[in-house]
Image 1: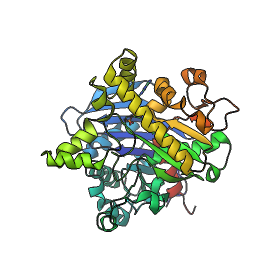
Image 2: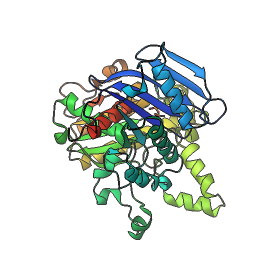
Image 3: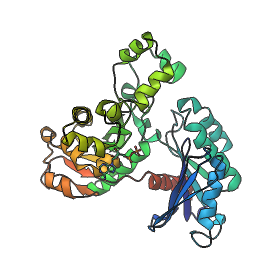
Length: 405
Ligand code: ADP
């Protein structure tokens, strides 16, 4: 394994998209980033940005993820708009992988052996895992000899004890099918746990936190001494708080009743994952928090109800997790909503005085993260810390590749 690692490519292959970021790892400088969208649709599109420059966008031909990676390579090495001279400058590649089950507890070098284990996990993420694997396979061909590292969205949550991660159904279902809570957004929770420790000036293995990733998909985690004790998502990302289009927690008997009324598994899947949450309750044909806030302020009952349900469930989990970790040093907010929507944050933070949160509503309206939203004397801090999953993948990739150097 090479010990001198300078440039790392991070790839996040979704079912029909490929996000990419190229880093100079010393100094964590982002050289370029972008996305190839609508892969295999006949109307693919590529967005590319060099450093902090303007975004450019153009239609492209991308029949599959391999084509998309070729396009990324061309863009990065383009004599006019690129940032490297040749692909040989790329020292390692980090890949976001949705699911590592219990096999991958940390970022792992992809060899034939580990990749074949990843292939066995396709049933845990039939939509995303084939794309994640396809991205690694394409890189093995395009970048021969360059190490590929898998960074798993579930890995950070693997520290949950069995009494937190198991479901209270006969253990045979766990043994036979692996039914348990895995949790997701692990890379983001990991990033903001490290960032919060630094912000608080404490060693990471001494911080107790409630981390809240609030975006279109949302999850919270209880962090005890820097490790996950519990998290809101489960076997799949459907569980937990109310999300853009997902219901979050629901009495499973509702699903049984829908089956008895004749709905198929696919129809219920679509209902709970794609038609519910802010979209389903708000009734304004939008899952975007900005629209929900605007319509709630204008008096739309559905949007008001959706917003109240969203905040209620988050306050409920913050209280639960604050207790589970034995009192948190801080509550950390991130994600599109956590970082940007002061109205949504206000609904949550104004109810946390009982947890020792002395909240500064003016700071909440005006400041942008990284920042505190509590007064200096507040016993429990609240902070907004922008997440950066790509950078976390680059850091993890560097760690794996330089192990033993
Ligand atoms: P994803 O889970 O798809 O990564 P994001 O983390 O990008 O989602 O979050 C999307 C959510 O963030 C949307 O509900 C959107 O309304 C909200 N959001 C993004 N920017 C803003 C903003 N400037 N003000 C308020 N809400 C915002």
